[in-house]
Length: 348
Ligand SMILES: Cc1ncc(COP(=O)(O)O)c(C=O)c1O
Image (cartoon, rainbow, N blue to C red; front, side):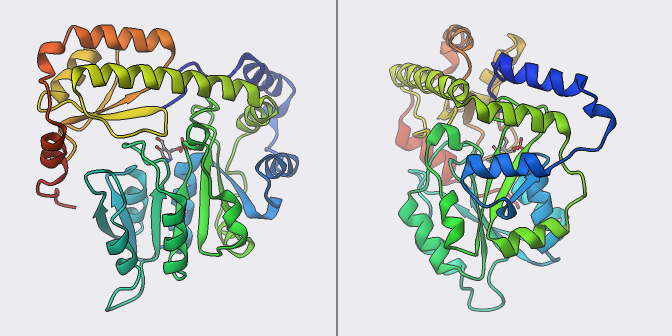
């Protein structure tokens, strides 16, 4: 699930252990100092930052606060499934806009959809940037057009994988009251088990969301780990450097097999292995290697999402896949994309 498989640095682990020993387990968490430290680190006023129990919890909070039955979520697809999940639980409707074959946003259609001929504009639009599962990035000029083109729609830019792409719109929350940005400590910081995410937004929206939050949404150990992690940015940088190197290695190897893949700005690669993709995933799983597959989704059935792990893990993966080469037919990239993304969309 695109985690940092090496986990956090030993300094972060020690900070979590210290927090558990120092009597913090018996008392409710204290947020003020942590919020101030995070605000300093991210370069935003503390009032414009919310601590959430992972981004997932932040998505639920947005839906609890803003989404009424029948409201529309505009969603470029394929993308992270939890946007649709929480929106649907709140009774909302989803309008899907498929990415094109080169994984570019259907910008014209998206801008049109922000101004429907009948009814209200969509309540919100989510852009995972980089996107999951494709790993692709939306150019900043396009993000600006969207923010300007839909002032009455909340645009959530989910930057869960920011540490790998290095591209952010976080400073834009000063200019655009319709923008919210999410970040997480689950990925490059290696703290997925502790659950810590953040929402950044203009003061008015942040206050509105905060009023709907539980009093203690985040636990003390997650905060102890996250604060130590931002005190040691060099550990995260080392991890990112290793991921980028291993990603290049994997892409070279996919090139040599003729397996097409989307250009990734993240810590995973979305590749079209063809009709045996689910079978390849099942066989890898028997060897203890988990890759994401979509056996039941006609649009994604031919693809696998491969997380970038440590160098040893990537060698293990490539070795295991060598043994399955007969299942990887040489591909015509154009044909694979056409079959993958231009078939009938599934029922939504
Ligand atoms: C794009 C995206 N956003 C959010 C999340 C969830 O993050 P968290 O662990 O902070 O809930 C994921 C996890 O895979 C993701 O891919």
